[in-house]
Image 1 (spheres, helix red, strand yellow):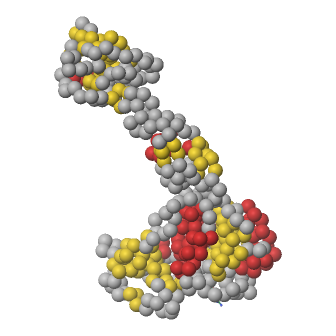
Image 2 (image 1 turned 180 degrees about the horizontal axis):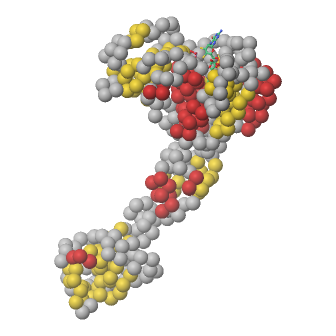
Length: 396
Ligand SMILES: Nc1nc2c(c(=O)[nH]1)N[C@H]1C(S)=C(S)[C@@H](COP(=O)(O)OP(=O)(O)OC[C@H]3O[C@@H](n4cnc5c(N)ncnc54)[C@H](O)[C@@H]3O)O[C@H]1N2
Ligand code: MOO
């Protein structure tokens, strides 16, 4: 393995340039929520498809000489297939959503009218197309309804349904597998023996993924055994678009992940980043499968997930704004940085800025549990003082 340490900026760039969107797929509208359009969508119809009454009342055809005392000639309710016209001075009883007579030029709310012996009297001002939703006023046939790259929220899905669209082409979500390695790991719910710890990375990564809409993840556990690691990886790499591996990526005698990945012809794009925590992060590709081997220390694994994997997944699902950006916040407490690696510090936003939390060790999650931000200190920073602006990634 090439042991050159890439910088944080290089690593972010390498992830963003090497991860590609999945091939677009047509899905039913109901399955497209929060996904990104892979093509422009043009309206197949005018919307509304005909002039519609916006009120319960009376549709009229008025002119300078016919401003009141309209003759009632018909009734049209919503859904009626009635394409009639009016003579000037005529009116029809009409209801919200019903097609107005082709040449009607106003609808008067029933509250402002009176009918006696089939004659309509109006106590309202008249203006052209008052209370009429005109054919095509929302969108005309062949006009662009939504553009490629737009995220389909419930309103967008509803809008497309109003146009009669049933399927859309989106970038599908990837199949994600999480492989957890380590002989010391025990599933919570069983008593611990000496030397064992509870396995926590799988559920942590699984819920972090679920928070972003990646609800279906496959979790596989493997012992620190080379053959088992290699066999598990071989099948998982074939079946998944993204494989996240936790642990076994460092230099110990029982860290088999790197060796197995290379043996399986995984292209190493980088291994090790000049950062704390999460130095031994491996990123590569095996055919079209994206592989991240995360350091087993829980806070390292989660930090790497937020900084590198979250944006990679957004790119896979075609989000045009996939890159994560920092905000500049005012620091509440001083911090002395040791060493020359860039650092991500567990932090919490406050009313006035951001506070660095305790327990920064990569083995600890107690303060990460309170954190809603990661402060990013670049390699060359030695000290950050209270009142200084710091680059901060918000965890949302
Ligand atoms: N000689 C060196 N040793 C280590 C180095 C180094 O550069 N040279 N780097 C250290 C750093 S930094 C990290 S981070 C870790 C990464 O090691 P691995 O990715 O191989 O992870 P493991 O050794 O398997 O585990 C590390 C730590 O995390 C615990 N762990 C692992 N998986 C889980 C899990 N699913 N749930 C909860 N806890 C987990 C594990 O028990 C270990 O305590 O390497 C350092 N060593
Ligand atoms: O790189 Mo490690 O993640 O600091 O413990």
